[in-house]
Image 1 (cartoon, helix red, strand yellow):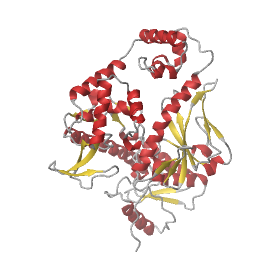
Image 2 (image 1 turned 90 degrees about the horizontal axis):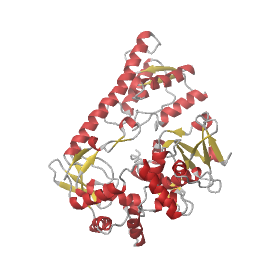
Image 3 (image 1 turned 90 degrees about the vertical axis):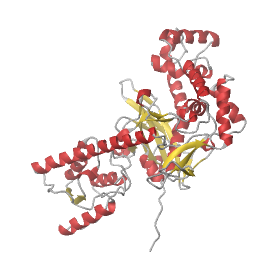
Image 4 (image 1 turned 60 degrees about the vertical axis):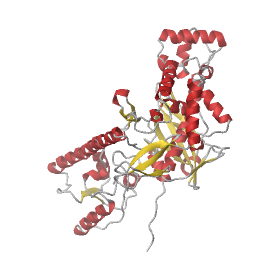
Length: 499
């Protein structure tokens, strides 16, 4: 179940299943329940995955699986997915019976047709619900209300009632408790507001770069949101987010039905201008946007190559690091995106670095990406109620004071035959309880999937793993599409009082 405010609560399902078992003279020996989990995909469905593993490994001590109805496998967008899981059970000699359906799951033509329809209807229900929820969120955005996410540096979330009267501020991690309440953004502490305004002055009036501003704030001991050090990206986010002039903007990025994130063009954004109290003057904000746009304007291929050639003449050598350190040059990622790689751009201007530096460039980019990946993981663990500490010496993460976590990015490379490979190094000296290995896509710019590798299972046998597209159940059992299972492991739940 994804929520307990419905007939599909696990308690209701259990009652119906128990009554069905009694009527059929069946004994319930084990229960698999995914409480509070979405049925859109199997990621995070720990109980379902455990049941399938028990069936496939022969560890199942039962001969019948009782399911409330067809949709409880999941509201998958591909109706064949739930059919596949049922087929796995039947292939192992275990029958599946539906307790709240009006048909016998006996393999007859009518049962097969009805199940196919219900699987398609389950997926369609999710699509319709997603559309309705999105429409409701867009309406609330247009009325000036905040829809999820942290407020950001210099701002705070504040509750208002159905009459738009302010009630109370919300601390990080707190949520509204009344259906009629809404959330707006208000200016934060005056010290933070002053820092935001100072960033704009430095950028617009003194022509300081984002990197220079970040270095200046760090040198003064001023911390960013969540006590983090300032970075070029954090400063850039403040300089480009319209919430600082009071605009409420939504749907910049879509993540519907748990599919891949899609960056939407501006014409698809939903907005309400002047929804919040501004802490930056609109004219000042527009001046900053003109500077950003000029720095990131699209150069032609010829302009990019001419700039690279002149830059090489001035510097004597080229590398991604040297290019990115110069504020007047397009970033190295611009050259990678336009020409496929830095090496390809080098060859077009007749520059030979003397050896193949592609892997060095890739490793450098992965090192730059690593803090962002760690930050996303730590933020999500804290959001679900877990605690996390980072050891400054080893960079190991201590989750809930219970287990250590190491996060590594695995570079993708192709063999001479064109096959993809990933090498994951396990830190034998630190022996983290879980190593989260992020497999990158072939371009090494995007995350492909994740492996949650327990040290007790894999660390004692090897110090590195060499992965292919398919690695067998021994390793792929640890593969997940996203880190939802990790967050579920780190989550904390309140327990009721014992009688």
